[in-house]
Image 1 (cartoon, rainbow, N blue to C red):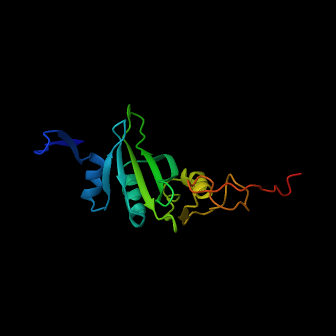
Image 2: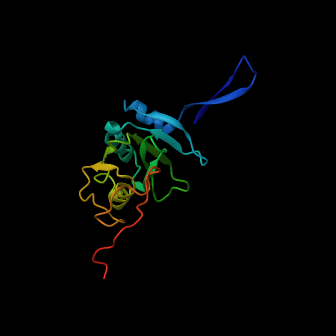
Image 3: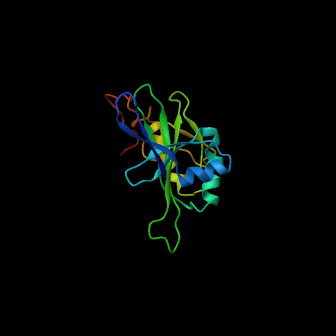
Length: 176
């Protein structure tokens, strides 16, 4: 990861600006649109991808050896803001002491949160995408069995959204 130090003439303070990262560079070399948004506390690249480019980026990362989807989750930026789907990928191998990792984030409009499913690349996305659908209402297009996994089938709404209003009463039918 390269960093560039810049100094502001106005206040004399120094800032570090992120220039590039090896995974982002590999995606850029393939002509895949994305944005490197920074590093997490473990120096893992966080890459933002538009929904229409997710499958191309995911396939490229899989082809580069990122063979394990360690985590997929949905998230809510806040009431009125976007929803998101995050993918934490790892390049597993027999000899890797600290395998390379990358985090992909896809931001989605709250009123129509649709993103292609990565199930066909990493089968571990199956239940993880279903949970994000169940809790946030994110539609994973192409998922083979996108149904609720935690909430009852007739549940109304998406309980992990920050603007969710908890119902005063929910009748459990056929619970006896």
